Image (tube, rainbow, N blue to C red; front, side, top):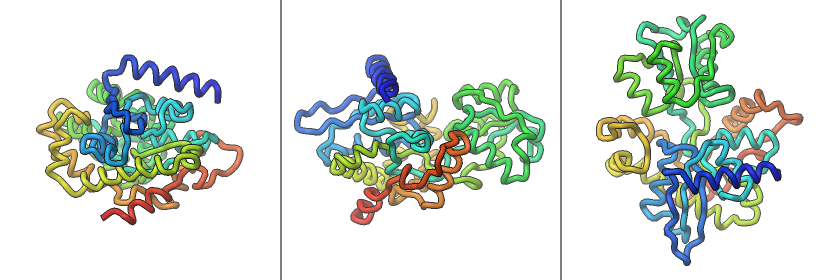
Length: 327
């Protein structure tokens, strides 16, 4: 734990000192300062930025600082108490399965915004036998999705070379160079790929569900500061509902500086919204069945000594309670 805290403090210091993606707090002495680690400026992070821009955090008496860092760093920083919340729910599940004091308390969506993009000459999943699929690495959501898509289409993962090619933009470069034959790419890069002639073969959400984006915090935070957690969750749920119900506002927001949707937001914002908007969860929670599935996926990699139960990883009680009171 000491080493985790040292890593977290160092990581946070680097991000605060050098990152161009640190979104500073408002600086009011009357507000409670809260730090949140975001894994990306993607559509699943949009509710954070909307909650800040529309004043939902401020209405709760919160002065929120949004800090973009690597997914694992968001968990390290939260475990080390350098931040109070993290957005990397997949990394949080893996950490909790390992025994870390972390819980996923809010889910933005359970529909991964990935498509399996392939070279133009490939027309079926069966044609991927003997070919190469690029992913973010072992245990990444892209790697899990690649395997699930293959299995759902009766192709054994061992009959395909699944390679760790790095972040999405690097993987796409490999696809363009024909180093790989296919890759699960995330929106909006999936649109770019299709516009440039690559084929969308499968939508990952059609074969697999997984929490993507949300809130994770420590069990200690839930126990010792439940009012603060409640305020954060309420602001996030308000933002999620606004995005889902106000299409024009959401599309205009996507065109702005907060979320990174590529080089031509004017052209792509509406396309992004048509997928991302309806996929937002009304109550910020997922079923126990999905919780167990995510734990099982993580356990295949982590190999915990004892079976892990959903309440050791997830706690949607506050989200469900608040959702019932919002109109």
